[in-house]
Image 1 (cartoon, rainbow, N blue to C red):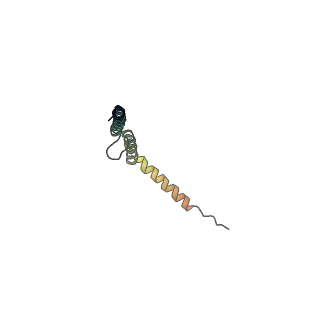
Image 2 (cartoon, one colour; image 1 turned 90 degrees about the vertical axis):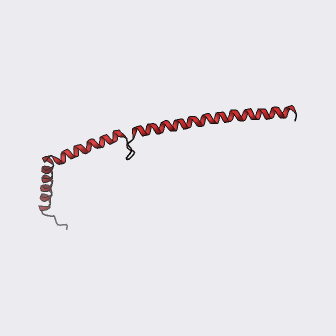
Image 3 (cartoon, helix red, strand yellow; image 1 turned 60 degrees about the vertical axis):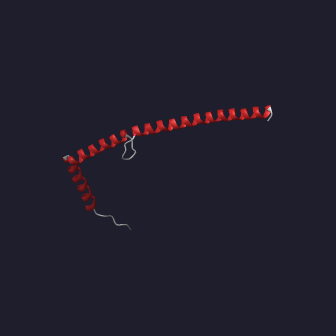
Length: 98
């Protein structure tokens, strides 16, 4: 083996080492980023459906309001008014189409 071949071989080994170190560093950063992304998502979502906690709280608040409306006496009054409206519209004479 002559000196040029040995230097070429050493150059290839050094170049390969640098390349692998760079690729390894990029890979580590990518994995770290994915881990942080998953951690962020898990902190901001509930386990039972993947919806955000803020959205779950909004839905819960709306449900409480609906339950309150239904259990109050005004809901029955509103239903009676709607029933009377539907009876009034059905009692109107129907126009004949010529």
